[in-house]
Image (cartoon, rainbow, N blue to C red; front, top):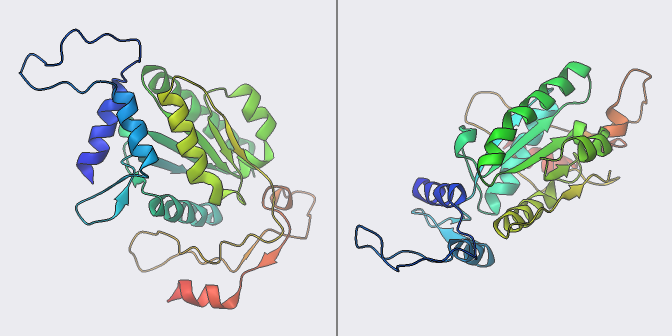
Length: 247
């Protein structure tokens, strides 16, 4: 799996352009050059990935996720990892190696907003140097979607807490657009009355404790709280799904 992410990273750092004229089909070391690298990566996209040494499907695209805020955000990051892993994405702790950087955000305090904007600013030089898909997830994406869309042009994908099922497709569309020299924004910021992700088993690190959600959203509408506006109305999970996850 590691060699796949390294291969795609090197391609994203040195993308071939369709107007480039290769004067020779062979390099100085005598090896045959691969022409139209961009088309090669598009082929990988259309084939929905390749298999790693363990036989699992992988797109070879590396994802780096940074999580801000409460335990519910930590839990949602585990859901996101599970959804992306099922579609063949791999993960890295090093954002310098990532093809995709996702910020799972909090909207409770202004300080949380400032941290996210600071991290987005840190990504600007990386994105200006190579292809990089940047996504903002979670409560801030839901609560400040207009502001982020207008004032943070480097953001390619905005996904609220109820839109995670669409995230793999939005990322692949953004990746393909960048490889074609285009810019395509993807949004999934509609609140749902029914989404509980009951059928998704979170991808969590091994340990002696874990977060287990029994409900999503809230109906209380407290004066000081933004949760009903960012996570929607209260809905409880099916008991069977809770037991399955606990096991």
